[in-house]
Image 1: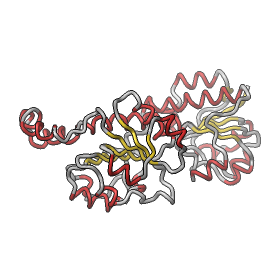
Image 2: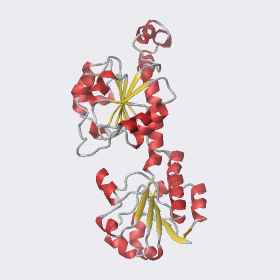
Image 3: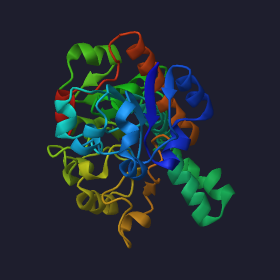
Image 4: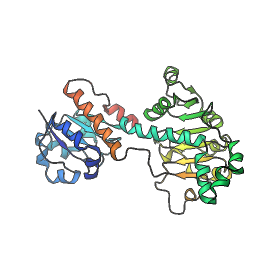
Length: 340
């Protein structure tokens, strides 16, 4: 039986590796010591002498030369969270240790959140709900002249157009979730083939076309040096009347100051921002008070029981490893460098 350890933050351990998941892992791996944190393992590096597999997650250790020297038998790391940037090192890659991540599991709740907001915003749900609350008049603003006025500018969820920016793991999953609905989906991703777009049932467009044509624009672009600030004010200016912008990616992909200036002028545009830059917004930011901006607190990612999905993905990876099969979610050095 392989020798294994859990090394990650205490809170992460309880969230990701629930009792059911720990029991299944213990049937496959000899967990020979209690769960460790990054701090506690540094104080007792001798615990690493026998370790062959590590189960980690948020708050996991930096696997540097000192760590590796103490873990001569380490073969594979199962990282039950997303980005591995905080734990790998050049020395780690030199040892040819396998590492796999649950980033795909974390994509599921983000895509589900995005789907909920696309459908809700096609009904101008935030505008109506917040107006009723502000005006304290359910009848007038819920059933009366106001809603009749607004109904003329409700895109609705029939034959409306949804724009997806970037067809990575999350963007692609959003497209899959949208398939049962009577919506036209267009997408921008310069790295995606026509064949892949056809598989997702989306039409590839330019970034400018996405903003001009879509009733809802949903951003899923990773934060890279090349993508920082790519969503500029001119794109917001070109948006359809009464359209919505949703960001569950990273706030830094948007030129926030330019977005704010456009949204001040274009009060017909809704913005649902689950991420900002910086995060949270600075004290006094207009984002807190603008009536056409909805802030949610990085809610789209995995929370509570959703985190156990990440452990489930890592258990499946463990079984593949034990069966000498390729890991489905393995991150190689080359892949890591592309994402870093």
